[in-house]
Length: 257
Ligand code: 13P
Image (tube, rainbow, N blue to C red; front, side, top):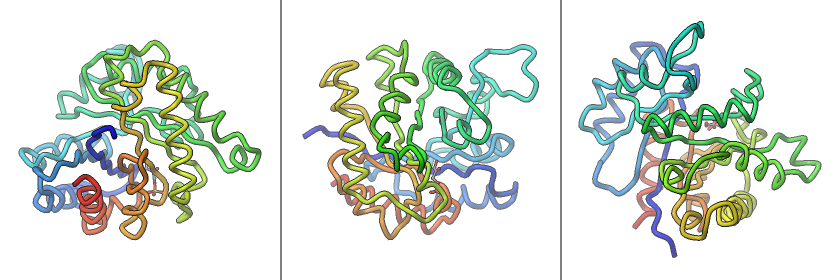
């Protein structure tokens, strides 16, 4: 069986304020046991990254950004470059989150450009994929996952794939309290891993971490992560409560040993 380090990400989305965000980061930094064999990253809003970086220093928690633009600089009003994020201490970036695909309107092509740019800049990319409720009900889950995975990874070498985490986040499970059953999530993850084997090779498929997102919380994290192809979680709502997020991290640690 492949030996993959569990990855737990906390996507804060457009939540917290300066004081609350810093407090949350500080509580996580003091509560996290860095030698416990789990990779943990948090993705606060852009504007708090620098202050939060100062609080995370030495904790072992990775600082990530929820998005990044693919161009290095120029006339791109409102956008944030990867070098700017690196200046703030960021080393991981979410790409293709469903809220960016479905609320902001990002295309597969843009998601691919951002993913490639993040990797070219030496950052980790967490590529998010997943089907909507309508797509699920019409039996298109696997086709959507395949399409978004192929499109998102277009032009990415096997070497670069080592810095990619895939987050399977069924859109209907995000922020709804509805979670995919461990069996349904496992089935989707196993198919994504098989796809990686056909796109790259078995070694790449065995190595890549595929994490689950969508209403993951302390009460369901352990059973989801117990599945053989679920290598961690990307957590929204529950990552805003330090106790809940730390409890999910502990569930990941238990799974790791
Ligand atoms: P929730 O955990 O709030 O469902 O959000 C999941 C998510 O979108 C993480 O990126």
